[in-house]
Image (cartoon, rainbow, N blue to C red; front, side):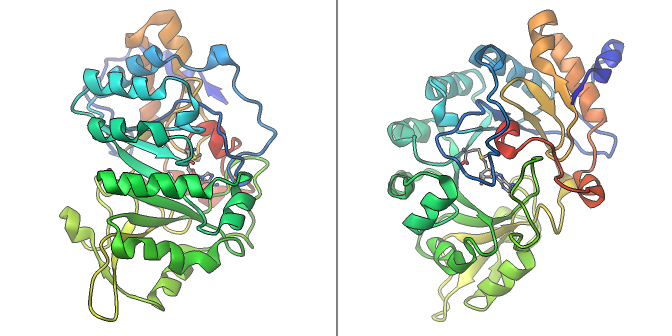
Length: 354
Ligand code: SAM
């Protein structure tokens, strides 16, 4: 659903920062650079949602203009996602341009790690931090989940990123009966390597979602499983925050160090992103831009605001005003989740940008 209502607040004064009606200030923009991906994860892509026609995909220069608008409002962190960002031709050059134009901006990427082999040195020099999606360390299971036998490529790139010292987080979508048997193997990656291994609760996204109660593996159960193997030490203090509680820089994950029997603490950490069972919506500071240039203020809210059209027809000032008006209508996603009868959003994650 596209929302044109925000256009009616066109005349309103433009605020200095993006603050919503719940007192939340927006500092973080997630940009989907494409809805295409070389993997076919069944939980992410429904196989029915058509790809966005080429002419409707935001051009890189347009993304840059919209980032400039967001930065003008005090946004200081941008994450590029998709689809698969490295599936879009010219993505790395674009990233370099963004870095040169906004050197203060924290650059983050979410990727499946299969297509980035040639980009790693450049990513390091740009200071980019990477979230790597990795649901299984078992080659067969990885192929079954993603539809592609590409685990060796992902692991190779993961090791090279660690060697280069690229800040790395690993995200695994937790699915009961699918990868729950791998919780120790996945968490063990954090023992010797400085990575945050985060289990993300499977969200009921998309009208054709394969999500079901039987696949859902709640964070509390994951935590109990990990506690059966290791003692856990909250590591929020590492970031200067309250132990176990998220802060803006930490993101929505609760993180712990794994303590081995010898007393040795893990180099990295184990984390939980409790998107379903314990929302972090009250501290949400993000906006999303879809690959076709629609602004979404909440993953769970189907209202979208047509920034591309505004930018093309009227220019960046119009886009800025729509952004500000849209933020005023940003909902508390957890309330939408609590009221849901079926999927919490009509589009699958691949079409929104995860
Ligand atoms: N292709 C990139 C990747 O694989 O990281 C970026 C896009 S992908 C949509 C971003 C993230 O969304 C992935 O970590 C994926 O596992 C996650 N994701 C997709 N659908 C999800 C769902 N229903 N619940 C939780 N996470 C989901």
